[in-house]
Image (cartoon, rainbow, N blue to C red; front, side):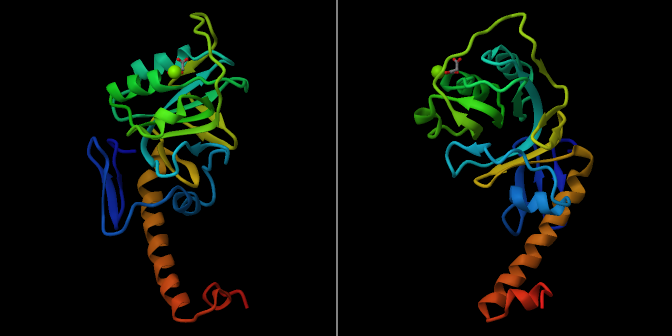
Length: 219
Ligand SMILES: O=C([O-])CC(=O)C(=O)O
Ligand SMILES: [Mg+2]
């Protein structure tokens, strides 16, 4: 995203708090996925721990080794303010890598949210906090912090079929999470806004009795 802002005809995410300036609500994760040719969707198991949670902003990538959360602590301290931490595991393990302490630390650093293909815990508290968390599972098992563990921050990661680079646009909502490569963000947000407008027109026509077979040219 250019200077943390994605522009579009109908609106834009702007400024350090990335407010959406547009007549309509911002594009959903599914809108952006469709608008970039049905790509960029993260694994469907990654969902908000509270369905009302939404996240958008530039990714800061993290990879954690199984059962060890030290690299998440390192990421919290290294990521630029306004980042969305996007984390994967180098090998899948059942563990609760993230919780109340890490969330408070991330909020204190001005991070925008967490997207993690792994387990988090303390959810009873986290669902009430103003910090969106998208995770693959809830898990109570504790983690270690080995200083020599093989993880990393800032380098590209792969979650499912999606490749995520630090700086890419991340958008998450109740449906799941999508990544839009930074170089495409302006164009894809623009296309998503146009798509939303088209679908609003279609909803009006459906309410007036039109058939989806006609509207979509499926006869
Ligand atoms: O401490 C941990 O390893 C994860 C956790 O529960 C927290 O951050 O509160
Ligand atoms: Mg905890």
